[in-house]
Every structure is written in C-alpha cells, then in structure tokens.
Image (cartoon, rainbow over all chains, first blue to last red; front, side, top):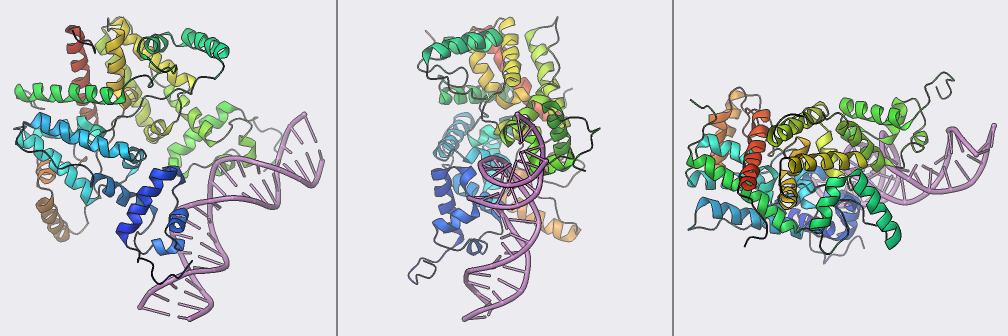
Length: 228
Length: 228
DNA sequence: ACCTGAACACCGTTCAAGT
DNA sequence: ACCTGAACACCGTTCAAGT
C-alpha cells in the first residue's frame, strides 16, 4: 500500500480536509498523526512535510471551519448583520462538534482567524461604534463570536431502572433543590437534570441577544470607558 | 525511596492537592500520572487507589478550585451578591491558570460543581427571578459563572528588531485594518496587537455587567420565554 | 490480601540509514 | 536530495507475579 503511483499527491489542503473528516468521524480525542496518516494511506512522517507538527495541524483544521462561515450580509443594520454572521459561525461549529474545543485550545490566531475577527470589528465600526466601545464589546462577545457557549456541566444520564432512578432523583433534589426545581419545570422530553431538555439554539440566541441589546444601549448612550 | 516508613500515607486529598500544586508549577500539559506519582515519592500505580483514572483526577482538581470560591455574601441584593461571588470565582481561577481549561474539558458535573451551580441558581431565585428566566440566565452566564472568559486569540509576540517589527506591523495593518486600529488606540504599554495592552479584569467586569444589567432589565419587565 | 514492576498499546517526533 | 523505518522518550492503564 505504500507506493501506488496513481495516488493523488498529498498536499496541505488534502491533509487538513482528511483531518477534519476524521475528527468528525472518530472524535477529536482519537485523532492522532498516526491514524490520520493511515487514513491517507501514508507513513506518519509524510504528514510532517505539510504541517510542522500536530499544533499546526489543529490550527489548519480551525482554518477549514472558519472558512465555512458565511460572508457578512450587506444592506442591513449592524445588529442583525452581526447576529446573522455569528449564527452562521454557529452552524459551521455544529457541523463539527469538536471545533469549539479546538478553537479554545489554540495558542495563537492564524491569518484566517484574524481575518474573521477583523471583519467582525469592521461590522461594529460600520454601525458607528467607537473604537473604545468596539474593543470592549469584542471581548464581551468572547467565544460567542464563534457561535458557541460553554455548556453548563452535563449531568450523567439517569439509570435505566425507574425505581432506582426515582430514588436517585429524590436524593438529588434534596442536595440540589434549585437545580431540581429548574429541571422539573423545563425538562420536557428527557429526565436529565440540567443542560438537557432545553433548546440549545434558544439558549444561544437568548444570550447573544442579551449581549447585543446591551451593546446597542451602550452605543446609543455614547458610552465611554473613561467617563466624565 | 520506595519504603520510608515515616511517610505520610497517601489519601485522595493529598493526591489532589499535590496535583493542583504540580499543575500550578509545571503547567497542566505537563501533569501526568507518572510525574505526579514521582512528586509524591510513589509508584504510578499507587495513585489508582485514590482516583480511578486521570479523568477523575482532573475532576478532583476542579473540586479543589471550586472549594476556594467564597460563600455568597448575605444582606445585599441579588445583583451585587452574584457579582461578588463570580468575581471571587475569578480570583480562584486566576490563582490556577490551568483551571479554566480543565473546567471546560470536564464531561460531567461533580457534586461540588453541582453545589456551586445550585447555590447560584438559588441566588437568582432569592432575587425574585422566575424559574423560566433563571434557567435561561444561567445558560447566558455560561462559563462566566466560573469567572473566566474565553480569551480572544492572542497574537504572537512581535519580533525584537524594531525595523522588522515596524515592517511587519505595516503589513499586518494592511491585511487587518480594524484590528490594527483597535490595537493602536488601546495598547498602552505593549506592542502586541489584540488581547494585550488591555485590562483583562476590566474586560471581564464589563462583560459581566452587560449580562447582569440585561438580566435585571428582563426581570423587571417580567420577561417570559412564552410571550402572550 | 496487598503491592508493584513489567508490560501493553498507544502517543508525537527525531534521526539516521537507505535509495 | 528525498524518503521512511526504526527508534526515542514519553503517555495511561492492565495484569500477573511477588510478597
């Protein structure tokens, strides 16, 4: 298998796409240089001609995902333009469930990442935001600019047996009454306690809108970090 | 070294505290079961009597950090009580720079984590928040309940030589004009482009307050997820 | 019954030997 | 000059042999 002359020659793009597909398939924790090489029918060392090391491979994978984010829509106000763009980022992220974790682990911004951030900043500026406010607003947006929120900790799936499940829930409710109350009033189809039985998309948009509305209010009142 | 009879016997707490100290010292990426064992003067397998595996070790380390968060202050309104509590969480997190990364990587909530979340929910409820609003507000708070924000991508440190640094910055400004504008107007003491030269604590409080103000507004107008 | 050294099945990456 | 197999220095964890 090591020397099919008709094999498509490797290149950086093919390596990155294969890595993204493999991570989609087996999960990011099972993506290794070795099994990526195997997937490509190549010796592990062959990858090192196209990426310097695994960190750079992950950087490249992030670039692929960021490349899937739609361009900003024109002819609309800053708020809905940014809203749509971030929700498009979210769609890309949801297609690659490992991506948020990898984005958070990156040490440095790559050009593709910088370009996305630059473009987002430009959208606030086009909406008339001061440099000052734009700066803080970008920080406040934080990882939500990539379309994800840190999940609240998921709780383990409830036991199969209904009797023990009920007993465990009773015990749980005694220790964590507020979580239990929350869970019983919002979980519709599932028995889990927190972070399930609620609509992740709704939660994301709720938080995004709280932030965007807050930004708008500050903008309208000509907020400055150095008052008086 | 393997059998000093006067050695303090290992226990889960000692293992966890040593792990926290070692991670503080050498960084989380260098914390392994093997060098933790060595630090404790013990064979690696000895650790497995106190934690089932590395995941559980990390869970335990999070518990130690969450244990450092101050109890809620009494005799004040929900908003400043929550604000102070989250800022106390932030202080704990800042003492252990690896902690945010580990918190984000946890698969399941441990009892200590559940207790903290339960208590936070209780603080909103005590402030008169509906269960409905409390639910969404907890999601919107997200990882900020732990006192951290996902950093925007740091850019690599600028080159030493002033001439090449200036040339690189000119090139950077051409590609990313908005980031450059932002950087030149907010970076005071440092030459870096984004995420440096600005006060992280200020950014965190800015974002937290945008959220809390938004929550307050929704609460005051008796917001519901199912309108009319 | 308890402890633990050796081993297993992996990693990412280096390097020198082969062509 | 290019390629790559073997090796290096690690992992987390299993397991059986030793006490």
